[in-house]
Length: 304
Image (tube, rainbow, N blue to C red):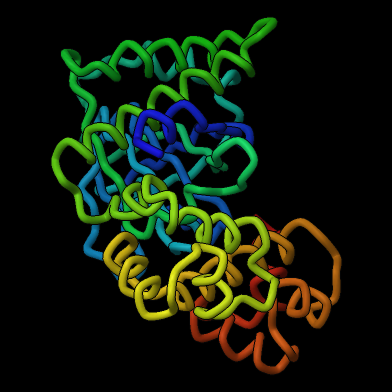
């Protein structure tokens, strides 16, 4: 398995985009969505404040992927007395935004296209869950992504027959280009791509991605990979950057977050489905990782 195979197998879907406008000194809290967040800055400058990470400076042309369950906020600079927030479907206002004179670009405003993404490989879900740190590109007019973003904006501002499929194809192109650039630059945060490329590690990784709630152990995963326990643990850590059980816990909590957001299943049942023996143990680990109890998280994300 090589990187070409991985790119060939990418499948992307997205929730509807929103056009988010921040005027003056204010924050737009995005919270902890169970999917990866995408932000493209159309106009203005400010920063993305991200949980457990240094803020990311953003400006017109910034394209940012934020890992699942990373609490973050879009931040605009300016006068507090002028603060204003608004989010709406992009087709309602995007043409107006694009027509705005760019002379005042960066003075007390941020205008962004925002969405949540799901990225998987055919036959396996949510491979993008493996991304742990934000991926940032600043798209300049000479960039290969510049025309792609322009086409996507056109489809969003003037939706027509086939726009949904076209946007999905353009998003796939954007994600591939972002990952390709990172691989070329030797970004250590993309070690998970090496894990996908290693057939032995991929067998175990796929088992965890597809069924995180199963009773996986290092021994059972090593057996899936056809290796001894010690050899598998060393190979997995070298390819992914952490032990398999650390990753398994993260995958279980992310899958739990999806279930809490999208279903009415009792917390105890969610805990069982993602591999925890009791609601108490699940709630304790969930709160340590997310900063909220499962019930608090469910209530919060359903208000968003």
